[in-house]
Image (cartoon, rainbow, N blue to C red):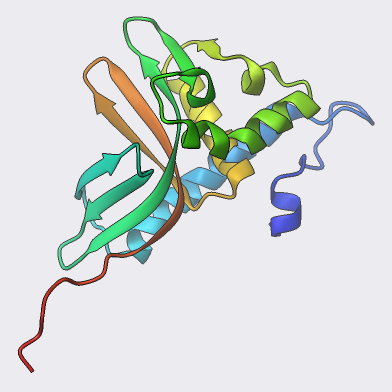
Amino acid sequence: MSAATENTPAPVEKTASAPDWAAWSREAVEMMVARNAEWPRQFGLQGSPQYRWDLDRATLVLEGPLHEVVATVCLVGTTSDSENSFLWSWANEAIPPLHGQALEVVHDFGREHQLALLTTARIPGGRPEATECLCIAARLQRAMGTFIDQQGDVTLYFTLLHAQLAPMDVQLPN
């Protein structure tokens, strides 16, 4: 799929004028499944590498066997097991504003196409609904992949916007 058509509605339509948003959303999930299989392989991150993230810096560091990978991320939103809902980062005052700013493309798309899933601050449901929102956001942000982390009752859903090998800090003897 070309970059120009990647973010536009798929040719599958309910009617002559209304795009089939459910099909478009399923395509977003399929796209991210494929990308999530590729980016760890591309960076030599086998298995379950150790990681750490920093919301203020919008970074995720993954520790490979021979190197670290530093990714620029966007926290798309969070779910709470106790509340059984997904909260977009743009609606969460506890999240640094740069994440909400990175989601403006998603919010704007939702307003333009009157898609409540993308414009409603809190979505009822859990991981399935959050994963759909995450994959839609990733598609619209042209993200290279996604990353999910569980911290107690809260699950965090990140898009990976860019990644690179971390610079080596080691001085070689020769």
